[in-house]
Image (tube, rainbow, N blue to C red; front, top):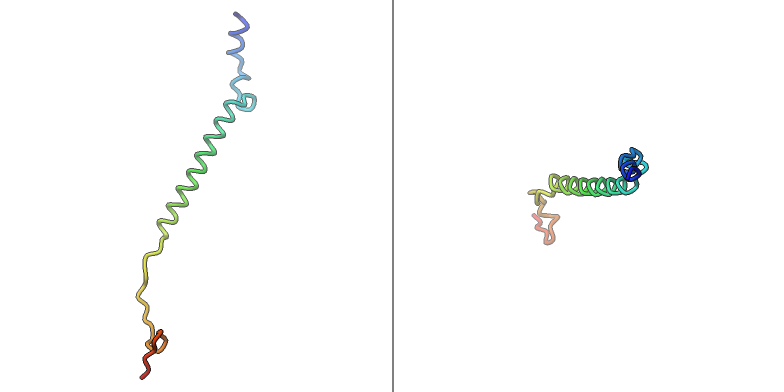
Length: 70
């Protein structure tokens, strides 16, 4: 029974560099969070800089598809 208690109290089992199960789960969720933050940040950037609409531009009558000359 003493060996089992020593196994759970071993500090190397809790170390991030030595325990690949905990480190891989942490890195997976960190990667998911970073990708989600990047996508949401890109969507917000596109939303704030979206095209506002057609501006009113003064076009001379002589340059239209059917030009009107004086």
